[in-house]
Length: 101
Image (cartoon, rainbow, N blue to C red; front, side, top):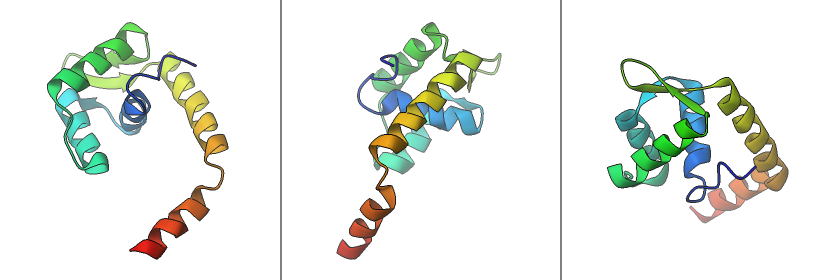
C-alpha cells in the first residue's frame, strides 16, 4: 500500500473527495482548502492528480473531472481500513479536541 503515500494524506484525501463525486482539479483544491484551511497550489495538486491517474487510481472524463477507477476504489477501501484500524479511538480523540474549545 505505497501508492497513496504521496505527501502525507494528500492522495488519500483526493481519492476520498473524488469517491463522493466527480470533481475537477480546481474543485478538489477547493475541497482540500475547506479541510486544511489553505488551498494547495497547482504545483501540489496537479502532480498528485497526474500520479494517481498514472497509477490507474483515477480516471478523467472529457470535462476534465476526475473519478475513481475500480482500482482506485479498491485502494481507497484498503486505506480506509488501515486508517480506521490506526485511529480506532477516533471518537475519543474528537472528544478531547472539543474539551479544549
